[in-house]
Image (tube, rainbow, N blue to C red):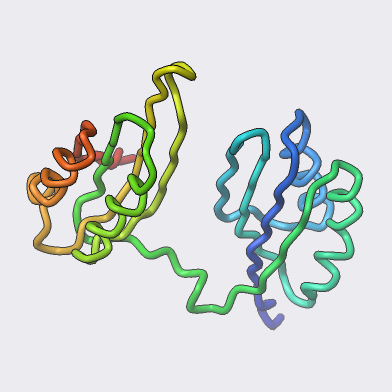
Length: 186
């Protein structure tokens, strides 16, 4: 009988000036190492490209070997690399029993929108699972867009979240919408 190999998990982050081919280069390096990508997020932010990946490897495989193999790939395309070992309690998917909602905020660009909205959510134990911002419109009339995916705790409703944010909507002079994201069953 063979002993099952332990699987190690790492959080890999890569950041640098945006250009075509970054995802292919990094994922190619991970593929060559035999890594499995369990979860990932990639985005462009103001001309910078950022990606974070949760990767798994069968033991024996050290963090230093992962860095040693990926660093030349990152150097070649001008990206910085960060790797963190994940402990077993950090790799379990944390699904919410409550509703998953999308909150959208649109309004004139001003300091504090993200802070004020997220502070209200945190005060009610509403977990943010994804957050994106961008500036649209013109230089003369910029519009700030904040999109949040949130997991509502038990007992919280989308209508309740809308009510919670109603004061901010008026105070910040922004539009705020809350809608349920219905999971697709397979």
